[in-house]
Length: 141
Image 1 (tube, one colour):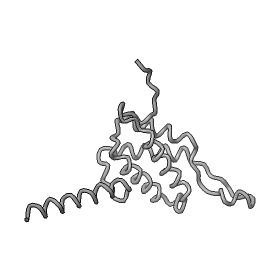
Image 2 (tube, rainbow, N blue to C red; image 1 turned 135 degrees about the vertical axis):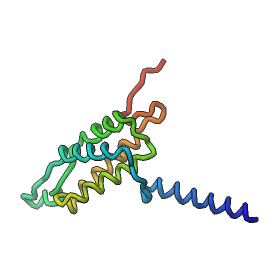
Image 3 (cartoon, rainbow, N blue to C red; image 1 turned 90 degrees about the horizontal axis):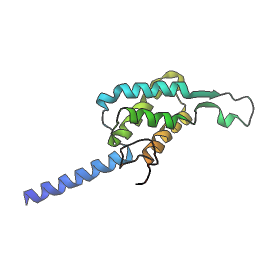
Image 4 (cartoon, one colour; image 1 turned 180 degrees about the horizontal axis):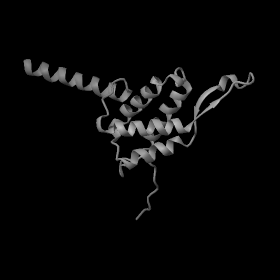
């Protein structure tokens, strides 16, 4: 009886852990990839531009934005260091937390959403067979 309850509780714990990892609510430290996080944050700082609210139409778009080519830069960075697919949510959270700690970008929710969407885009097109972050069309033999 005791062994069965241990197995059941372990299975429930594992499913809760796996679900929270998938949702991104549970993150783990990125360890040796901390330098990669710093490089990505520096790339984000280079790719940010600001729109001023000079008329009523642009007030909705005012604030900090990320240039559209950032996803390509991100994919190249991840490929260059063979970043593991399982840790992409942890890296995304670490990068966004670093951006949020910068006083200049405090409250720049649109920027944070664009960074989060770039990570999701790169994650969606991850090539599991070739373990590549850049979607590549390989020639068929």
